[in-house]
Image 1 (spheres, rainbow, N blue to C red):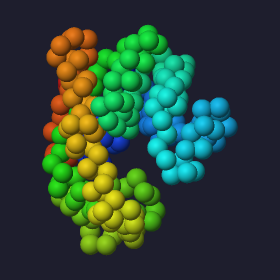
Image 2 (image 1 turned 60 degrees about the vertical axis):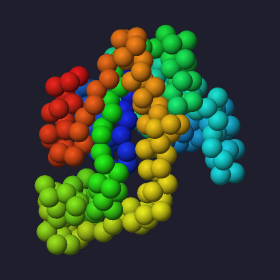
Image 3 (image 1 turned 90 degrees about the vertical axis):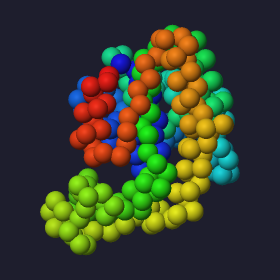
Length: 224
């Protein structure tokens, strides 16, 4: 299965991607990791991307998409992949679709996790990190994983919050991009939704992101 994931920051998209990765032994590919890998390895595309990043500019699609295609064509992707974090706007969706088809790569499934913007913001700001293990789930706004005061609900370790998780302005900027259904990330999701409805070659799955991780996972797996 070749799967494209959509969901706002705070929706649990990354968590669901990791769960599917382990369940189906399929690489979970994040666009940010592709940039870091190409830059650290000194590839030609990585060097070009670094020039833009160092200037604080967005990396052009003409560099980003070839990086992504290169990653999707590696041996570990032969039995499927999960792509997360790209495309971020409708133009990128159109270009990615065109590039995948030219490369003979089939997109099988698109997953969209629905979550109210205010709930998504609260989930981000409610995340707490355990001093002993950052993977211990603690969130002051989610009853199922609410910590015991300022102590980790799993091991009792001290908790802290990431500074960027408390930056409401930064969170709002990211969400402005995602929830824009005219040109932003939601518009790119809807582009693929249109292909699913009109061409029938892509399966488009919609998940309710409000329940807990286990319930969302069960819903996702049942629909794959």
